[in-house]
Length: 128
Image (cartoon, rainbow, N blue to C red; front, side, top):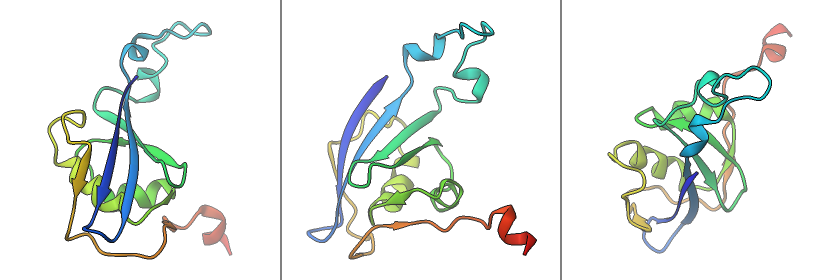
């Protein structure tokens, strides 16, 4: 797996710490149970990255080029204030591993604490 650590700031206010991961030789791994390529048969490919928030310890798989706000709503992960601005910026980069180790996003809104996205209502909530 390829990895890269990136620190993201919005001036001197917030500081995000992220680990970006992408499958490498793992894409060729074949299941010992059904002999299919395990990762590809689950829908993951080279266009996906795992972004882990090193502050909260939570992350998710994202298809590069998506809509960050919708993707975060879908995954409902607990993130620091810089996660969404960074993911939005990352989606615009041609190569997630050719980015600098520090990215400053001065236009990103300041926040005192991280949060968990509420996401769409689950099916149990809509039955009541």
